[in-house]
Image 1 (cartoon, rainbow, N blue to C red):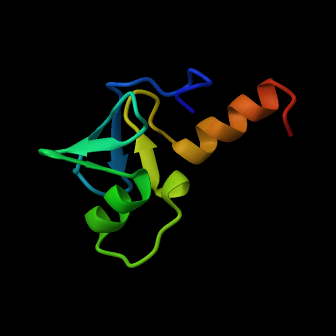
Image 2 (cartoon, helix red, strand yellow):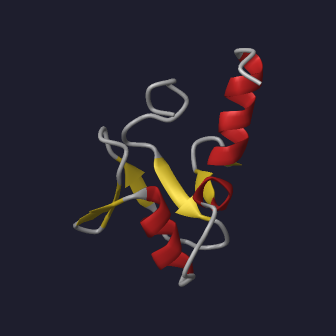
Length: 81
């Protein structure tokens, strides 16, 4: 999604229904505190779940949309689906 330009390094990601905020890094990882984690691990740990669908549960603060919504909108706009 960084390559598509719909999510930028520095954007804030919040697992749904939490106040936990992580920052998108250029390498696609999420920085939370002093740690860099995959999106999936960041969301799983924030929610305390053993498995998650991170693109559904990760909310992009700048648009207030899930990463899944952003991905679908981009793909529809560019006739990818």
